[in-house]
Every structure is written in structure tokens, then in C-alpha cells.
Image (cartoon, rainbow, N blue to C red; front, side, top):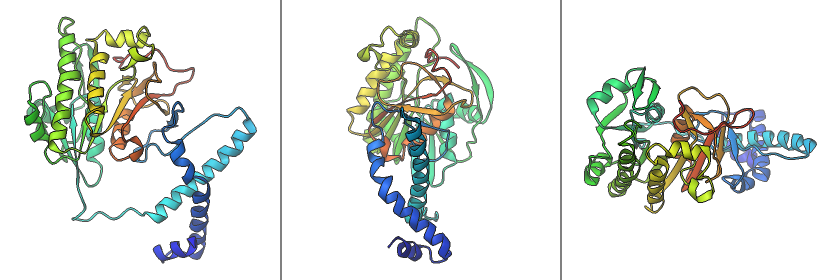
Length: 354
């Protein structure tokens, strides 16, 4: 049955190739595919993957077993079945060639000039059939800053900022503090998805509380209202681990104390997270650990909600996860906590560690 189906779909393949694909399809259907749904996002199990630009970001999973021999045999079987599944899916659902009539997905990135936001814009701009709108506070300044690579000082932070080719990106004014809901809805008009990568910049200690409240709480909630009004279908929000720390016994943890000292930012972000959850929109909340401007040094660890209280992660990986969440159905209405795995365990979380 599989051989006949593959031959019908791929008449030009050799008999040997057809037989191989048919066998792997049968193996995948028997072993892997029924288990995939049960493994995806099963708390408190965590998932580890290497950096990847593939949208199928959550396809692989690593577990532990006390029986070394059993683990070895299962690992070999798992790798074989995973390869078989990939071949099966590719043979059954080949990627269509893009045509002039292909549907274009429009994604707006709020906070596009920030370190994480600009990485998200860069990745989206390289995707086919994707129209990218960079939401910025000042279009003229953004045109200049996005095209430059430099080291800048923003408030209390020193940032290494990579350049972004804006040739395939549309810049639009979007200010969550000063813009009204109607004005932001007009900016979002026609967008399919929204990535919220805004956050206040720590600076004057006397004004940090107000700034965090305006940006990470009130402004973000306004942006969510605007997304609903504009008919946006998917929202990905970049937040932080320990955002809900008070509610799972982490209020006195070093990471919570250090990060929340900057304008009570974790408390403010939590309000916006809950607002998004209750909005009725399809959402994914991405909670990274301490953000690093350096490239990834370890594999990505994806954990469930309210499970990570320490660890750091490259902004590159955060951007990869955000882009993947736009299209991966397994990320629908989920909270993902992410860090890089390190030898000896994660270090004390510091949300402002560059």
C-alpha cells in the first residue's frame, strides 16, 4: 500500500528509493506518530534541541532512563524511527513551490530595534512568503539603527547590536506608551501575527517603576487590545522566567529579587501575560532566562510553565523560538520557559546579564 502511494506521488523515483521510503513510512506510522502527541509539552518533562532555523522547532525530545542498556537500545530505535518519520512526512506532504499567487503572511514585530526584536525581524525577513512590519517608535532613527552594527549604551545596559537588512522590511511607527489602541490597531491592520518584544529600558532609578508599568504592563495590554481590534490571529509574547515567581515559592530566590528590583518588572509583565491569556487570541508566551548577546554555547532547553528559576540564553535562540511559535501548532496557547543547558547546571539567573 505504501509503495503504491509513494510511486503514485513520485513517479520519477527509482524502485530502490521507493521501497526505502515506503518501509520508513510504515515504520513511522507504527511507532512514532501515535507517541508524538503524548510527548509534546508533557509537564514537567523538558525538551532539548540544538539551535535550528527550522519552523519545526519542537519536533525532537530527549529523556532519561536509569537502565543504561535500555536507554541505548531505545536511543538507537528512536533515532531510526525519527528519521523514518521525517522521510514519511516529506514524502506525504512535499513543500509546494511558491508562486506569484502564494498566500503572503504578514507579521508585525513590536520592539524591532531592541536586541531580541531585531533578531526576530532578521529571521522573519529571510522567510519566503512573509511580509515583515517592524514596529518602531521613530522610523527615521530605526532605518539608521537597524542597518548598523555597533555597541551602544541603553540605560543601565551595554548592548552589542547586530545589523539588520531592512530591504525587505516595512517600518511603521508603533509606540505602546503614547499611541492609542485605535492608532496601534491601524498599524496592525492586515497583519496575521504579532510578536511582542517590547520592554522598558532600566535607567533612572527614580523612574523605573513608572517606566516598567507604562511599557510592560499598560502599554502591552493596549497592544493586545489593538491586535484583537485589527483581527490579528496569533500573538507571541517575549516575557521572562520567574514572571510568576511569587505564585510558586520563588519570591525570595536570587533571580526574582535581582530582576524585579528593576521597576518591579516581573510583576508588571505578569499582568500583561494574564491579559493575553484572557484575550481569546491564539497566543504563545516565551519566557527566556537571562539574555545574552553572544551566540548560543549550549543546546536549547524548553521547559513547562513555572519550572525554571535560573539559567541564561542567547538572544539568537530566543528569536528562533519566537519565529517557530508563529506556525507550530504545538505551541498554541502555551507558556514556554527556555534557557541554554550548561555543564554543572545553570548559573544564578540575572535578567540583565549581557
